[in-house]
Length: 424
Image (cartoon, rainbow, N blue to C red; front, side, top):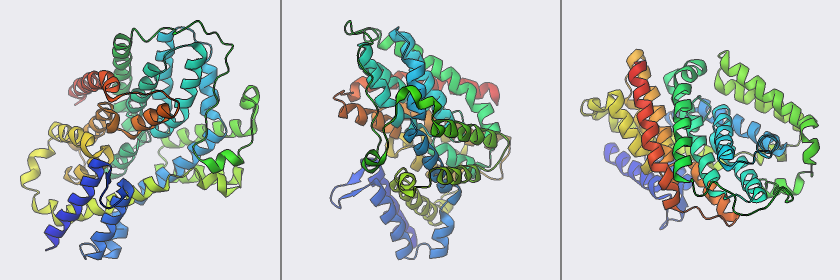
């Protein structure tokens, strides 16, 4: 009874993840995930203490802390000001594409890629309009580059955070192995973008810098009402900008010396709260829906593993080979998104960790991340860019995105495979 009950609840949740919502119940992904977690406990599949134990609070704490830190940086105009200063003087569209992709990749490696896309998209649109360039290739470029750049570190995206916690791989060891793949993949992605969008990488008209770059709009309406106006020319000298710069440097140093990721993120969050003091600014930056969705998924996947996977462990042994698991996670990442795919397959990775098993975790991280470039729907970062562009009357169609996304995904995965063949 518990076996089939778990299968039904698990199927219900993952259908919701696949479709994005369950229209007949009026539930989105977060609602489906939370309801699935409640159903697991209400039906007796897991006890309440088991449910609490199933939630990976290290990952939740890491996400929570990084959301607050990134929100503070966005409110201070940190990334927007930095991007404008670096990109505003570039006149050649091809060089502009290279720099936008490079900035997106670097920032996504240091911070969560979804938030980087949220901050960069309105800035890129404003600069492109000022220069009279087509914004589409540059928007697609920052989306693809954010996914590729996020591969380099454990804090680049949520699935890497989860893999880091479950595998025990430290920040430096992960970055040492994955950064070369990210750099090579980024170079290949730019070359492909340059070929595919060669007709778009030119000026649409003779506009000069007389126009004013459009200011980015903060995500939360309540913050827009509270936020004071700032002069872009003095933003680098503002105490908030400087403070956020020191916080970012401190976070990176702490990561590199091996301080637990969640401890670093929460400590940085505490510093931000002390500096800002007004809690309304802080809590408005937290994506509570995302945290709730992850919590529900942790519970449902744990129940599925305890009631179903353990009975199929012998049959599933063939999928524990690193590349077999890599192919499966790449496919699942495009069906149900990369985070649910990693949560589902993680229990199949053998323990204790050794050299071969470490490669399994790394390959899972690589394939789930690079697979996010295949289509618009394969990554939350892609959706953020496309939806923000639509609000600015720039329509990026599925065909336009896949025109670059499909070849870049295939080529970057081939680069990753060759790297791992050499590494292991």
